[in-house]
Length: 451
Image 1: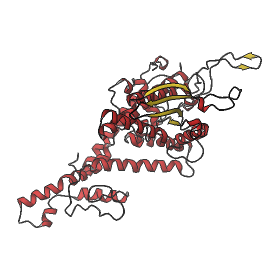
Image 2 (image 1 turned 45 degrees about the vertical axis):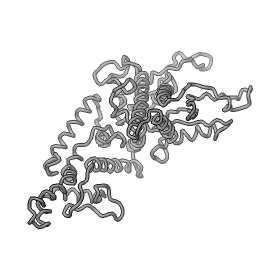
Image 3 (image 1 turned 30 degrees about the vertical axis):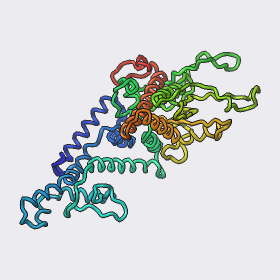
Image 4 (image 1 turned 90 degrees about the vertical axis):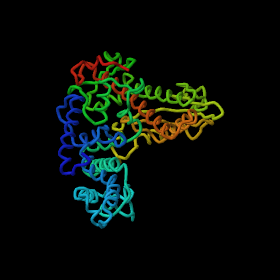
């Protein structure tokens, strides 16, 4: 496809894109209301750009011949010069047909995408690429341009959600795309080479539906079946049932925020266990649910006194001692309190970590707490990202690993966090809709494996 002119390869590529989309629709189950254009595009974006990583062949077809010429045209011209030493340079330059590639360069320029002489994105006054003059061979242009086209497409959808008059669905899509952009999103493309990276079919379908903003397979009018572990008094009598009973929305937003049945804490606990495993892999000791007396709030012995029980205590022995008190928190990026105001990347995680800092203070009692916030679509807070970088540096020093190995381990850790999150969210959603959902293959979702 890279050797064909764009007008010849694009129709074939678009047909292949439609086949991929049709396959995804089949795997994720039936939908009554169909997919919107944002979800169709998101399916093909890279996972680091909020997508599902399935690739857009149409983008590759657009720039395939251009990227091929940038890689091989200088060598071809040099070879022709050796074969025909008497030929003029203008004849050598015109020996290869460039109309299709030049037309694509012009279309890219109209979209604000220009290439430098080194095959990189051009900025400012850098000289622009011209196929009619000699230049050095450029590699990696296909990946660069397809990613840039995906970024431009994504930016256009994000602009709709923050524009005046945006619908609630557009705003939800914008919040979702921001939250999917980074962090634990690597679970989408992870190879299930170990237990911490494996999802069964039902878990993967639930996670992918949530990521793409598709409705979960729940009947209209279904009520939340999550149960509290205690019975609350109502007047003179006890409630006859401690089931939540609130109507479930198609996207299961309520289930991810419901305080009953342990659903709210299930994702939190799953993330804590995954982070504890990461800390141990980095050569640290880890304890869970540790009470820190230095962080006691209120007068000791009084009714107002509140003990600080932190999720994880991570520490390392000499010769490179380190210590972290970690408080993990998980928040839905489209919870009711998040739906108003400005939509920006990382808003939910940043606000959650700021509340943790406000609660514990800056090193109160000589103890500094590291808040680790995770959004429901996988984005990590800045302090969580910093903690993972520090642990990754320790792992690299322990294993004497190079930069590429450290980068691969960092991606795997984030993928493990994403898998842990998806597993717990799947169980929460299935228990919330127990008895009123079916999986894409028609089996009772209540019988799905809880992991």
